[in-house]
Length: 226
Image (cartoon, rainbow, N blue to C red; front, side, top):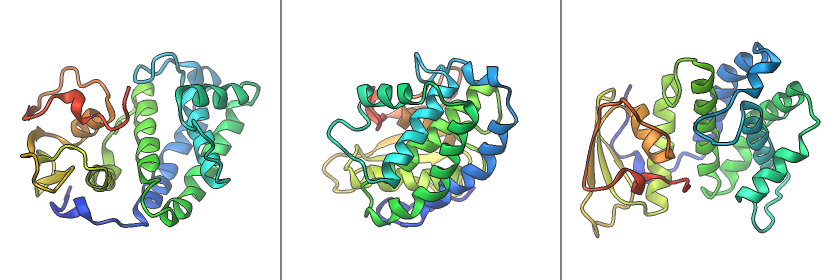
């Protein structure tokens, strides 16, 4: 995996869409092959939610983007719960249909938004990792799409002036710089693999994983909050 060190301050407007369509091609066939009872499995990374709930949340978020519906409080916990409840009588197949449509069509809308919706694409990809981990499938928070996700993470953290971090990745040819580049704070240092770095920034568990983090606490990296 190659991750250029200077991608942190460069926005590729097509990157979120590519990440989503590539994930669509990999994840949707997996979802369509699962039995209905698999959609009721609890997702450890999202306490209180099942696979179906995660998919309903993701598909609703995509639909909001496609329909430009961003009323006050959108994507708050209450709004997320309402989106899930509105789909309570939908079949699993219908939810997957809406999810697939979002993965397919949201990219150009996100590209035109100028960067403010890029984090949504990253969050949807992280939720795909949540589902993969629940199913025991390989590639959760990693796999072939990890370089794209890391490039997007670097841009988002730079744009939002997140704490600076220098990441020496075990599975990349070059280090990755993330966060604020103003120089006002010395960068923290991370040594480990790319998937674990994604877990830290997404607030996902990293039990049993070997990595080193100096100059910052793990919870300071979480860009999605509680």
